[in-house]
Structure formats: C-alpha cells, structure tokens
Length: 250
Image 1 (tube, one colour):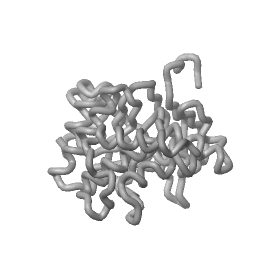
Image 2 (spheres, helix red, strand yellow):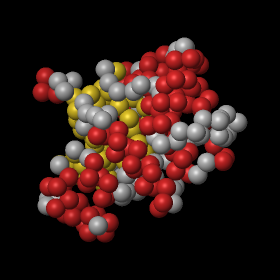
Image 3 (cartoon, one colour):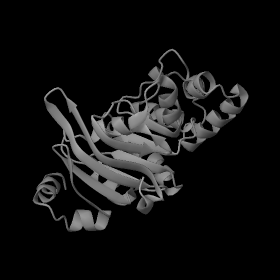
C-alpha cells in the first residue's frame, strides 16, 4: 500500500482475472478507506462479483495486488491465511447459504465457535445482540425454512457480523428478494454504514447507492470506467458508457 493510502483498508492494484478465454478483470484498481461505503454498479458480467470474490480470497487473481484489512490477499496460499482474512473481511451473498438443519442462533454462532474457537457463552450473547440489531429478536429458535427471504438475508448479515469483521462485502444481497423484503435488508445495511462499517456493495439499487455510498464505481467489460462521489457521479457522469448505462437504469 502506498504512502498516499494510509487510511485505505482495501487497496486493489491493477488486478486481472480470466476464466479460460474470458478476461473478467482487465487491470482493476480501487481504494476503499476505513469507514467508507463503496458501491459497485454496472451491467451483468462486468466483473463486479468477481472483484468481491477476489478481495475475499475466494477467487485467486492472475496478476496485480490486493490488500484488505492488513492481509496481502494475493499472497495467501493455505487455509490458515484465508480463514484469518475471512474473519476480517466477511462476504454476504445473494443466496443466503444458511444451514437448514440449524436454527438461527446456531447458524450465527457456528463459525466463531467452531472456526475461531471462541467461548460459546460469549458468542451466544453476541448473536442475540446481533439479532436485535437486524430486527429479528425472538427468531433465535426459528429454522431458515420458516423465515422469509428478507429475514434469512438479515440472519446471513448477522452471521457475518458475528465474526467482528473490519470490512463487509455485499454481493447483490437484494437481487432474489421481493420488493417488500428488500427494504428490510437495505435498512440493515444503511444502519451499518451509518455506524462506520467499511462496506463494498455490488448493487442494482441505484437510489440506495446514491443515498449510502461515499464513492460509486462503474464497471464495464472488466474495467473501472468511472468513479466519484454519488452526487457528481449520478448527476454529471463524464464517460459515454456511464451516461448510457445510467440512461437505462435511472
């Protein structure tokens, strides 16, 4: 990380990634400072979700560097390094990935207790507090199959927060939800941003991106075409590709 980026908690430098002949990332660079919310927007297939997976160490990069929450992600080889990374950089996916045979409380407690070997009583107390935070008090004993999609997604957010991360990554977390439950999940994320959690969000919710993000990045064909503060970005986009995209979605 350069001297100019002393406040950066995530720094992506000239990252490339291909799947076979498909060049998904073509030299992507971005900086996220502690406490910032950054929205990644762009057409499907433009590399947004792949970038999040690279930051989280789920997808190895071909070239470039990624530093996230003190981890040199591009150098990680074994499970120990990746587990340490994912304690500090947690990702919430479009699909909730909750364990259907475990109740809500056990879903939230599983990783801190089993992976991080933390005290179960302390983790239980934290999990109950997190359920209150995501407005699901009283659902501790419920099973995922008895919850709405929006409730399951909020449990997934609480599960990620139980790791006490420094950075949260959200990958289209409202894409599979009906309009009523979208609001519940966005409200939860808005609270996290207001509390100062560093967040990177891949989203198609343009109004939400404008409201909560400190910086908006537009990706197209594996490149970051343009980025800026929301007001400037949405009101005065400079690149023709950004103008065309916003013309379709706004």
